[in-house]
Length: 62
Image (cartoon, rainbow, N blue to C red; front, side, top):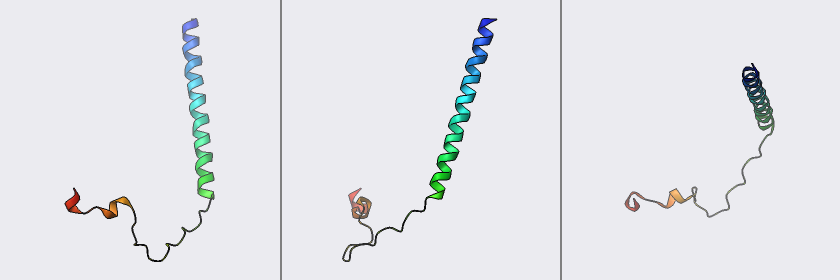
């Protein structure tokens, strides 16, 4: 009998923990959605459009 109660308590604790994590994720998603990011800074004059590492590779490099 004690084993069944223990297993039930463990399952309930896991379910409550999952529910709390879900609520925290929903709250976090709402906070991210409410925050409005600013526009990116403009590129300084003279820089190419793509300065990433992939922009410097050509097919001959592979």
